[in-house]
Length: 85
Length: 85
Image (cartoon, rainbow over all chains, first blue to last red; front, side):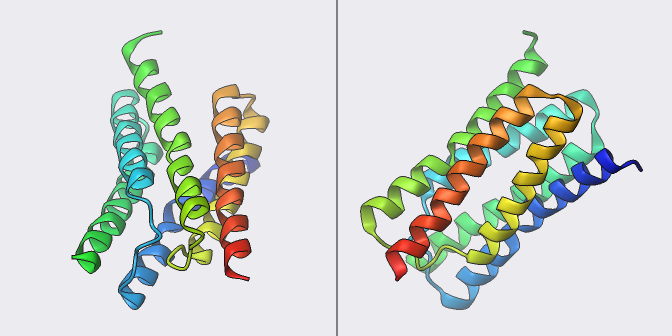
């Protein structure tokens, strides 16, 4: 793996795992009032399309990263819904 | 532009603009307690690396999308810092 591939892989890993602290924060505080439904609705739609794009061009890193982000982003929105009802 | 390119472009646009509703929500409510610093620190680092990656491989769509996401994510974290002090 050359330096450019390494930077890309690290970038993908960081943006993907970044949603974990948000999931844990909502879980711990049982509060998600400041989280925007608009952001996550739009973001989840975009990530789902990235996943389709990755599948269509056969790019495994795009598929894997976006599958994980999709799950985590759906978890954020589900937790928000749950703690607010 | 073929269908696959269109899906990729739409995916990029959706994930990029998704941070706008979050910025507006914090601005409007003056509250960002539930937003995770951990998420945005990790996310901003990742997006900055995506930007480097885009520059290194000379991919303008990656550069543009990540430059905008970077600015919006920094805006989220700056607004959070500002409304909480």
